[in-house]
Image (cartoon, rainbow, N blue to C red; front, side, top):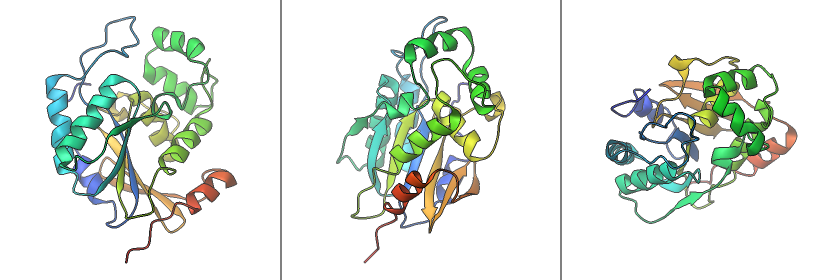
Length: 238
């Protein structure tokens, strides 16, 4: 699953995001070294190629960058820093938050052995089919956590693109759940440095993924999320 370039459709997905609107990019980290068998891989860094590609992606982001958030895992932080350097908007920092690594985890001590025994695609398919996975929360709860996190971090000064650097096992269930898919395979699994954009048009949530634009609608979650989202509408341009 090791890509040698920025994944196809990323530029097209970005072009589908309306100008002058708050948007969030949820993206997998860039190319890393292989994870040894029996290792969680938390200490595995990006390759030099991965750092260069993340910087190139930053140069392609023709939007005003608001904030960059990252999983606390080092390769995600490295990705965020390289993207930020590539944008030329070197005014900020990369903020780490466990929401970008643990939104689907209830108890890592219980969930960890599951990931050691099974590959992540197997685990995510069980989540998507509402089959309980030890140590993990139901898929809707995990998606609600990450969406609430992303849409609670916009400023009220000017429209911007916020970046959120995460992992394949968090990005995949978010995409599948929002698109109404209950299975995922290797072909549809997020590649390194691949992600989806999210934004609102009026009361409706949209996303762009692999070059396609999707209207997710307005009745996805319970009222508390809708109330939060309503308070985070795009600032008025003057």
